[in-house]
Length: 325
Image (tube, rainbow, N blue to C red):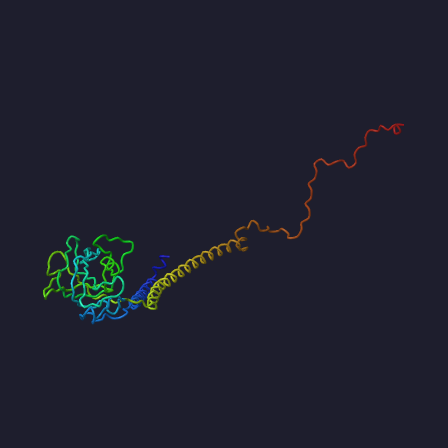
């Protein structure tokens, strides 16, 4: 079959099939790119800093419209309410987030059993590679600016240990700190005390500031475009299959033609060997000789007996008494 595939016309056919398949693959990639699109474009209004108390209310749900919003708040930290969250990356290195409780000034107080007079919000202040490098939050009144993010989900069946948290989960932290809280947390950008920067960069040491930008919007899948992308891949494979099928059919035709020629040659040989005229020419001894009659022949005369019997045998010697008398 390889010999058939190497025919010039099938080599040209293969080049054409590969070209068609390449076009189909490009169309598949184009359809696949259109199958995922953002639910909504990134809003530029999230980079405009707004007061936390006007953006989010404590004790309720976290609306997606305020996610990634830059906010500002005035308040103070409690050094006794601080945890480390493991498994956080910074420049490819894995370490810990320092998360501290921040009492928001002028925040509405929650009512009900278990509510505290002061409303708090968790603040991710910085990153450290070693838990021993974590430092206490700055004291005094702090002017906080950062990015508002929704609460994370705690890791199930995980005991992070004392002074640790499995995630920046408001539900987990308020049980540990026993405070009323906003339903989200802030990733700190700047921390000012009396106009002086008291953040990780100004304090020095091994605490690294967090650089959290706006999160990309969620993607939604267009299943029709995704189906089209798969369909174009099938068409690309089908183009190559058609070429292979045509080559295979040509190969079978060549085999059938060769078999027909072989059978025709054998039939011609058998016809020559069974021709009566040819057999007569090849076997002259079997033909009747000249002078023989075609009709029935008389029986041949029997040869004479060299000792013929006596037609009249001699009478035996008389012994009859009547003759003797």
